Image 1: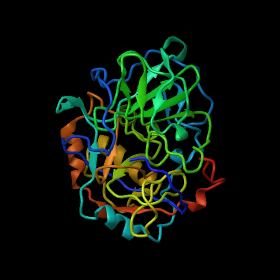
Image 2: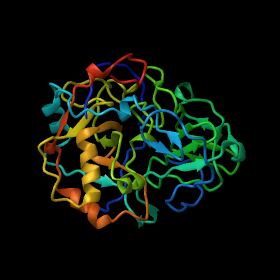
Image 3: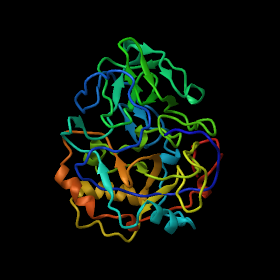
Image 4: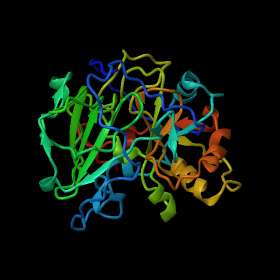
Length: 342
């Protein structure tokens, strides 16, 4: 799923919907060893951190999800429409429904969504994880708690926030052999920095982007506002554009690139939805969503949480690809090697 080549271009956005079907992100490599059993969907809140002074951007456990001026946290509701918007929406499926790929409870024995772990790094076991894409992975060590929250779907992502340093650790296709953790690739992110991956490098995501900042989290809905872009997948991608850093197939004008940013159209009427769903829909209008990985079309990512109302999430099934458009985010670029946005 993670192949290396090269490209550059512009940017984009889109949204998603829920049905209790199994999470379906793509992964070509099987798990090599027995995984620890799935644990409860709630993050492990085992540590706290001093308050950060990064502005009013999104936070988790007092750590910023990157600076407030990061591209993830910058509104795109006033950006122009990308000239390839219609073609890229059609490529994914203008008539296909949006899918909220998260919820409460379990499906087929596993939690629904991508969980994460909150740890104090000094009190957490550390591993020199082994990767089968070591040339594009950060060496570590990686702090991974005993019986960590791990994605049940095929990609087996592990996401860990060390609250002592506000560092994010992400691993793709994680497995444990009883002694050490292994994976397809690993990325380490300073959450106080706008630094991107080296150009052409993957991460735990095909686009070379972080995963955690793009998850839909129940606490944000409860607070009444999501202040960042979301993350979604599509079966076919070609090339990449800023802030994406990596591709899975050669560029093709008719197929959307990784890193493209989609948004829910401004004239889409959200007033008839429950207030909780309006928070998600408004975020899709204001911040949009990044095409971040190869997987099922229009699958929007989120963290599992027992407080999600799956029936309510199903109300978003009425949205389709035609309700979205791609934005031209090239005017936001301050430096192509930075996630800082104008």
